[in-house]
Amino acid sequence: MMSTKSQSAGRFAEFDLSRVPSPCFVVDEVAIQNNLHILSDLANASGCKILGALKAFSFWRLAPLMSHYLSGTCASGLWEAKLARTHYNGEVETYAPAFKASEMDEIARLSDHVIFNTPAQLETFGSQTKTHGAALGLRLNPEHSEGIVEKYDPCAPGSRLGWPISKLTQEHIAMVDGLHLHTLCEQGFAPLGRTWAAIEAHLLPFAGQLKWLNLGGGHLITSPEYDRIALTAFLQRVAQTMQTQIYLEPGTAMAFDAGILVGEVLDIIDNQGPNAILDVSATCHMPDVIEAPYRPALLGENPDGLNFRVGGPSCL
Image (tube, rainbow, N blue to C red):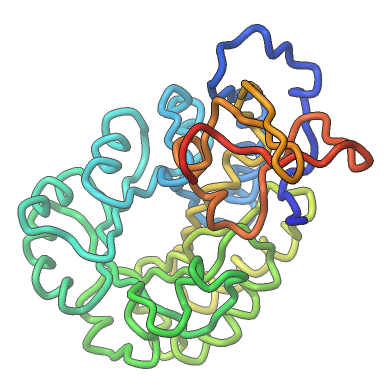
């Protein structure tokens, strides 16, 4: 059986499910605030800036709360950049594997940083982006794999994400204000440490030439198991070594164990075992479940209870 990332039901253990319709998502604002407080404490202790990844948690009703604790947001395209600039305070960083010419002016106006995936995109849109006052960045592929599942691994062989770090040159550095890299997916500190050990020699020649270095997302900082003391010391050391401002952009860490999806069992059919038919669907309500190496936790799970296959009303 696949494991779950969830630590506990938290305050939802006492939540009256009859208070809400089914299906619906319910978010615990206090749990979100606790997560944000941890991220803010890390930023203050380490000197790094933390941006919230909207692709992981874009619950804009809590934008004022998030803006109080974080330095800004990172967007993955035009519409998230619009969301960020409309509802959130602080910096807006936008990255996409490729940008469309028809959207570039608006993205540049909305963004403080625009991070390009390749030198070719940088050359195509760099001057246009700078005219709107946005800083320029280049995403690197560290060519060091820490991904647990290949399809979620941005450094898997043949990845489209980021310029191979082995091809990084002084000419590229001269074109940008900062660099971005990403290797993790809801992981602890050790994989980040190994990533830096693999790429440090490549980046040291450019120490003092960058305004910022963004170490991406995938850092599950708010998990009780995360070694935040080690992360703090690491961020301070990298900032000093590279003589630059360090950014992180966690996603899941903002909303970790802070919400539930409420669903209802509509029927049970027996076909070589019991199948519970729900009014929620993996494809519609939690698509990562189809591909992720873990499953959602069920409220009140009993390891000695009955085994059911659960599925929604869709084909998958």
